[in-house]
Amino acid sequence: MSVKKSATAITLGVILLLSGVAFSKSAWRRVDSGTQYFMKSISAPDSLHVWVTGSGRVLRSTDGGLSWSIQFNSPSVGFDIVRFVDSLHGWGLGAFCCYVSVVYRTVDGGSTWNQVNFPPTIQPIRAASFVDTLNGWAAADGDTIYRTTNGGLSWTPHFVGESSFIPFQIQFVDSLRGWVAGSKFTGNEYPRIFHSSDGGRNWVMQSLNLADTGGYVKDIDFIDGNIGWLLTAVAGERIYRTTDGGVTWAVMYGEAGGPIRKALDFIDDSRGWMAGTTFFGGFVSTIGHSIDSGKSFVDTVIQEGGDAQKIKMFNENIGWAVDDAGGVLLYAPPTLGDVNWDGNFTSADVVLEINKVFLEEPFPAPAEAGDVNCDSRFSAADVVWLLQAIFMERPFPCSIASQTDLANLS
Image (cartoon, rainbow, N blue to C red; front, top):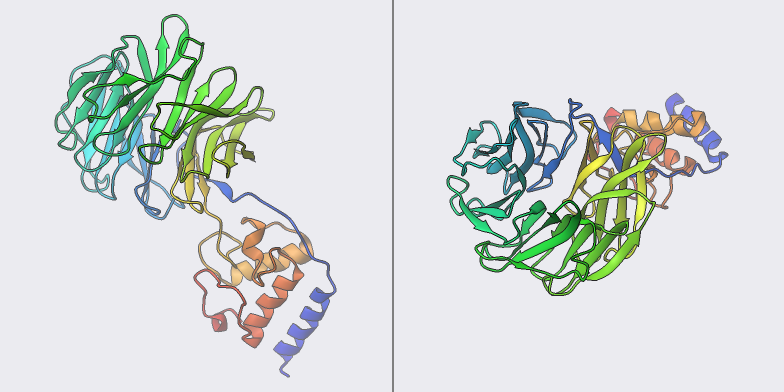
């Protein structure tokens, strides 16, 4: 046996005497976006291309949210909304400093942005939805929903029939069916949701059986033309669910005194997430996760940065949220072996696992990243597998992320 392998065997013997090290950590982490500005919107047409916006700035990531670059920077243009339907076609919407609505369009992934004609109004755009490169809608204060059928080059106003309506969210699931939700404001606030089945030309108010109760609708999310959720500020935080396109709504979840919920996103009829904030000596981001259609949520607190404003989940393994301090919260559970969360398995990951065992130094990724022997926990046994793989070319029982040639690690 070589000296190197003898030393390895001694090391392995010492490690095997150690007890397992069990710990847990959320798969949510805060990524530095390069700014400290209030971020208000997210759009992700696929798992790699992500845009966020706020305070007149648009940021783009092409690696799933690991790194960010500023594409648009004009504080006087108050972009609060960004929407992309693919990796090239997108829109930024908001208002100039004096509440004059403005819309910009890009057809090259955000490399260039051009302002498009929008009907003159002093009411700011508060919500927008696009279903493809042609069909989109923008909701402004005071009853008006604007529709485009040519990618934003021109817009036609339509009306919901509530002059004091303030929209907080609009969503279309196809070119015909959509909802807009917010509040009627007449000194007090009253929740409102309207539905269109003809592309936004006509709108019908849907009943929540609380239309004259104080409060408002914060967010809406539909996964198809029938199943959707409302997040409301009515008697605390409440979530309503419909299975018939909004004809009837049922309370799924309600609490008072808990986290302040601000946005929600469901990927199917069972699994959904909410973004918001909790006070721990200051406001910090809180992400709630439900696996029972919104009846209950398990919360994760990210104790750094600001409080989460919006959330977008691509699937059960990839998602993003933005906070009010320029941060992007990334949900991307690392694959096995990648304990430093850089997307690759290298010798640096081995060093971190050894340091965790001997020095109790944490590594950045959640515990499951270190579980290379597939026993559902990280322990000294995983370090044994790593060292044997490097020095004895023993194969891993699990698939390792972007596995580097082990000969180069030895």
